Image 1 (cartoon, helix red, strand yellow):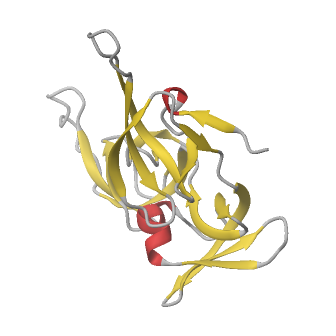
Image 2 (cartoon, rainbow, N blue to C red):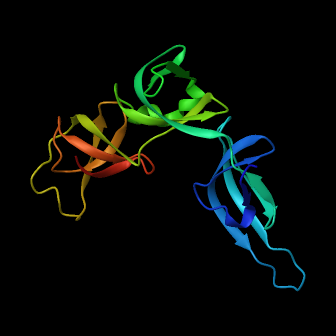
Length: 191
């Protein structure tokens, strides 16, 4: 028998299935009524893993969800073309293709050979999960000028090898590797 998840126990990043569709929870808020006999409601902000649509929905605290038939499979990024982005499944060594809609803005963090986690729903690839941080080379940034640090935490724009532009501290030079947060899309430190 499939494991059931109560709506009240759904937290951020929880995966669940509702109406035969897999979802991931982005935010969860529990509303407890003040009146006697009132029902506790759970307001969830969720992303549909098949369409990437984000919306909010309210459930009763005792509503139950199935655990989705999702597998996370390690895969390495190969390349992107007009057909989509191509990945090599590290378990079966088969090439899997994801459409532009499935990959979304993840291409900003993908370099050839990068290992990511591919989501498979009922055996078919539906999306990917990036690591929390990636290491990328700084393709271009202006040199920092001495005396530019009058305001404390001074940053400058930098274009990374994938084309992503972020703000970096003045001491970062072109050609250096930097650690980038994939969630916040910002500089996280030197690599």
